[in-house]
Image (cartoon, rainbow, N blue to C red; front, side, top):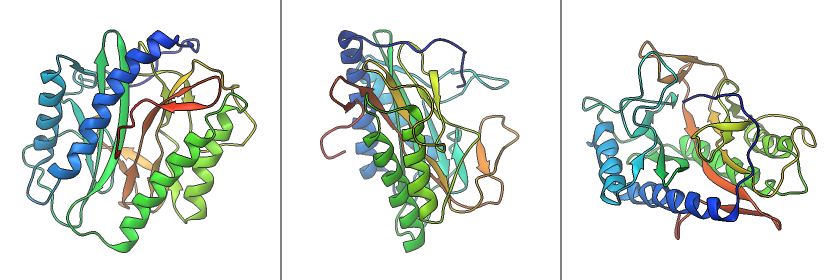
Length: 262
């Protein structure tokens, strides 16, 4: 699930409508997971629920079989617990317990176009400090999205995310970034969650961006486990992840993966 170098493609209104259909399904699943995620379920339960929902609508899980490691990704959702930053592989032996946090990242493919989003959930009761990590990560996403305007540049999004996270005492993952999205799951431009305001590519109507802060409680340094997919914090600290697919419009932006109450 990594990049192929390419030009930035501007999407038509018709293409964005298709992405909105895919994005709505992703948003619905992530919203329904608030009812599903609880102590005692496995990460595989989350994956199976997500895949069944997608296939019931005769759509395709975007992550299943995705490339980027020595073997294709083996599940429909990335499910990452506690110090796992991204790309956690669902497993029947990974049982959630109260106090955990779990990030779920997934995509849907519909009529040639992709939608992609992620959220981090509390499992049972979590500490105030952990709840604050989730709150700040989601806020950093919100503030980044608010900069996705046709008068701005890519660095304005990056800087907004970084400012919120670091002002709260957290760190921003630097080895993994947000991305353009459309006919491919990962397109240009890459969207770091850190950077200088006023720099980078000019934002234009028709750009569709997957903005996804990955924020760590401790150091921003990460490493990959032996499974060649799961990325964890190097110091073992907690990590949170929130993501939306966002289209830049003539007058502002539209969140394609947002649903009512979501």
